Amino acid sequence: MRIHVLSDLHQEFGEVDVPDVDCDCVILAGDVSTKEQGLMWIRSRFRDVPVIHHRNDYRIGRTRILANPRAYPDDPNEDFIPDLVVEVEGEAASRL
Image 1 (tube, helix red, strand yellow):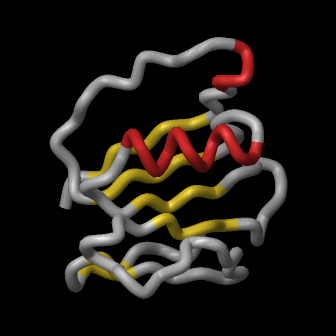
Image 2 (image 1 turned 135 degrees about the horizontal axis):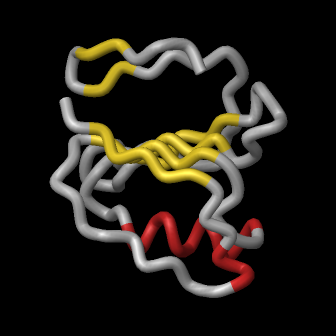
Image 3 (image 1 turned 60 degrees about the vertical axis):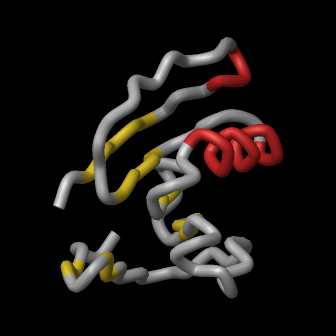
């Protein structure tokens, strides 16, 4: 499994050029941008892979799963899940 990990993009201060990476899952740690702008950017930038977004690197227990609609059509992508364990295509991820 190839995981693309990004941290603290803070695009509210300017757009960050994120390279295209062939990966199976994206993990975003820390702040991406302001709340609404960050979620819109994540959903538009990573449409084809599941995304795990831990929005604040200093607040444990605030993890969000943002799944692509093709893979998880019924997932509303709105819940924060404490003590989360994620399984992507049969591979169990460590507790976040």
